[in-house]
Every structure is written in structure tokens, then in C-alpha cells.
Length: 206
Image 1 (tube, rainbow, N blue to C red):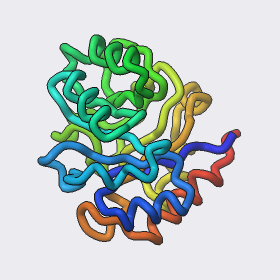
Image 2 (cartoon, rainbow, N blue to C red):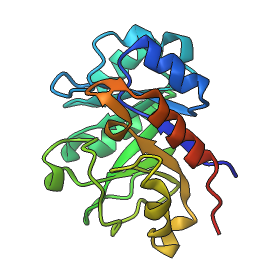
Image 3 (tube, helix red, strand yellow):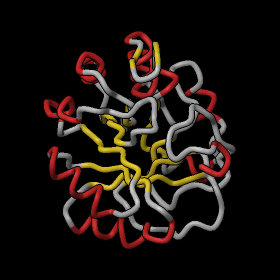
């Protein structure tokens, strides 16, 4: 099985086209103004809606659903408060959206059903929701198939995958990278993007 490569934090049409042309399976578009990777014009995702993922921080799922419908997204990565997370995920899936559920590397999470999980650092450790460019200890794996995230690029991916707990490795479906693929905040380095995608697609799990 070829693993999925997700390039996240895309903001510019040239970067989107380049990542898609290199074979990225998923393209992440952040809707969160405080982030340096906030995509102010989500119409840049329009040519690639089959691969586009709306990455959004919101207080409720209805806001994410409305934004997804406004721009035609079929896949969402919802960063929701814990108190509304379970009901929010149910709402999004009931609406027919593919949910890539953020799964922080921390104890005490309810094992919610999702289409795919994103195993990422805990916001309590990084101070921000979502991407931080930092790795995590891989101590609390998601309850299903996941993309590994946190401090990844073409140089770090192999070592991080090799360090996965054996019980988690069987659920590895791919990898996600954002800040470490940049030439500047919000702009991708084509060579780093290409190297990451090539590395993900070339992984062989034993």
C-alpha cells in the first residue's frame, strides 16, 4: 500500500499546483487567521477539491460545515474545543464530509469515530492548535488509521516512522508536513515539497 502524502499550509496558487503536480494525495488549506499559514483566499483550492482538506479552528462544527459548503470542500480537519468535539464530528460526518480528525499525543481522549486521524503534538505542549513544526513522543496513538504529523520533512520522516511503536505502525496511512516544507512562512519550497512526497510514497513498512 502506498502511503498518503499530505502537504498542509498551502496559501498560494503556484504552491498548490506544484504540490498537486508532484503527486500530493491531500492538500491542506488552513482557515485560522492567527496562523502564518492562514489561507485568505480559499478559492485557490478550487482546482483540486478532490484532494483539498479544509483545516479549520472553530468554536463549533456548524461554522466549519458552512465554510466547507461555501467553497466546495469535501474533506475537513476540524480543530474543535473538547466540549463540542464529539457532537461536532458527528455533525460533519452526517453532512457527508470526510473527517480527518486531529488526535493530539496526550492521554484522556474519547476514541471518536473518524475517516482518518492526524496524530500530532498536543496543543498543551506546543501552545498552538494544529501545526507547530515540533515532533511528539508518539505515546498515545489514535484509535484507527492515521497520518503522522509533527516536525516532518523528507529528512526526518524515515527516522520518525522507524521510531513508531509497533502496535501503531500497522495503522500508519501516511504523513503530513507544513512548516518544514517552507521557503518563508506561508510559501513552500518546491524542492522540499517534492522530497517529502517522494519520501512518503517510497516508504515500505515491514
